[in-house]
Length: 158
Image 1 (tube, one colour):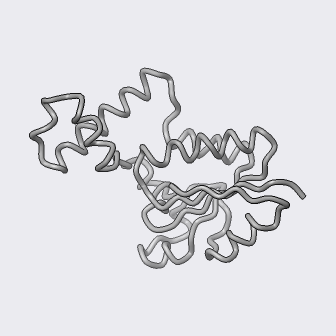
Image 2: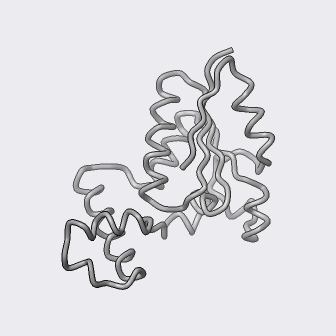
């Protein structure tokens, strides 16, 4: 058995989801069996429509505001809207793939994407609303069994 990487995605914010996929896609490319568990707001990343409307986190928005005085007097919703656009522009200018492209790349590379069945029930999300290629919805114990079935487990949380 080999090392297994487990990444828990609880956030639906671009600035948290992007590094989660960067690590997942890197680890599977290195030959490590990798799985991601999407619970609570992270389930939006696997939703066919909701993935198109992810925003930056409040912390990420405030980080941008530290460097741009014009942003400092905006309300939180305005700040999040403006900084989400800024982050997407920065990612595009630097030829970074979109979240949707990162998800597709992860599936193509063999990362197992596990939707949390509890989150799906809580937010009334049906399996047919999820993107193609994800695993069947599972509970936390199934995901943890996946991670712990290797000789060594590496677990990260976003």
